[in-house]
Image (cartoon, rainbow, N blue to C red; front, side, top):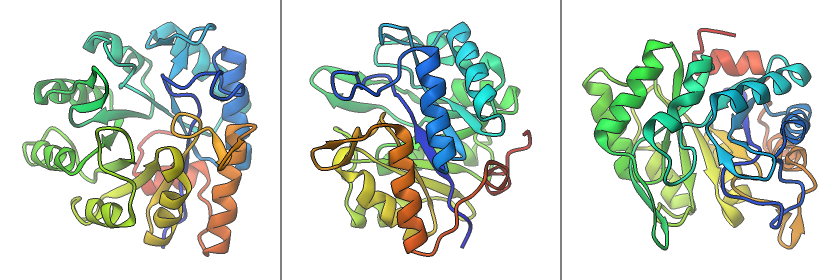
Length: 274
């Protein structure tokens, strides 16, 4: 079984300090949380950025200064930028971080109802536009899916030559409007992706650690962090993203999976740049 790649989603676009005071907003806080996660065992930092007051932004300039700050404290970490941004952002706004030529970026492969009137829109033409821009810059897409139909979209675009093989998927489990975070559902998703693909599971809220265990056992990879969950256990807020990563490391060791370094993660994911 391959070594386990741990992704840390350190801040997201929606979670706030009211939910957990350790959620990072400023450049210094984002670098601090990235380092805490990296030191605990995360090879990959999934990055959203915020203004100092917590407002989500896709500003190229803000991403640039945050990535530089992260690289100063964990120089070999893989930084994966989000092109999801926040609900309501324009396509061009969401795509700004690609101008920095990161190693990886997320590619959301379908539209999802996030609750109330919030709809996270990703039409087929939008997905094609996003992945073509990634291909132009040799950026590896992480195909982010919230339900089975989004896997089918990715496979269809793969057959048409837009998404390159081997694909790498991130299954976001338990989000409002998407597939639930049950072992049955993860097995279904894993069994639906193209042969030779790699995958990561991201359990939302109370699903984070049960899905992490499933990912470890099934030979996939695991994402944890404040974007998806702010608790170390029920009723106990995590003091940092590093605490969440450290818990996954402990679970992996108990279950016999070794942890991948950033360079080992690059090999597993087929990244061409380091």
